[in-house]
Length: 227
Image (cartoon, rainbow, N blue to C red; front, side, top):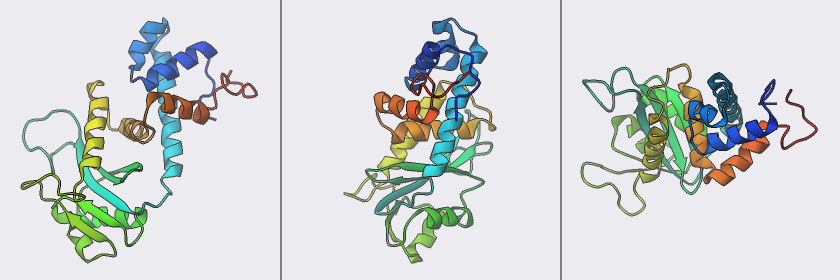
């Protein structure tokens, strides 16, 4: 089960799920449907919790082949230092299997000792790993991986040597999250996995199909009662 103890009508649940997929905020969806905002907010949260649960299971898959890795910083606009080492930001580490899925994890910092265990646990030896020139990736030069670097101060891509795919994900995720005008750190992991889901499952039509299955809603499985 995921969407349980829901008192909304089946048709309202379906419409909310459709609005969620189309990136309509919970408050806007509630206004359109004429329901309490808290009801829509709770429904959206349950959907995100189900996404997080299913992606946690999927995360057991080991990546191989050509993998792009990078890190990014999420948070509101602040004065002072930006980019790597920016204070008050949430640090997210990401890996993208080319022509496949992205995987993200929140980390405390971007030190080699923090990132290398994540890399070795997720990527199969002998895979080709693409990074930028950040010093924390130096260990990959003498690892069991085939490491290629791209120097962004000179060029953003050199044939297959680039990390454009993972950077595209960062841009997409920040676009999705920007409309919320700030997300508290406690809720951020759910919103991050929502972004990962949207990237991995392509079109809204496919996302809706997957969420219907994952949420096991009574609207689509008559044998299951939501209450």
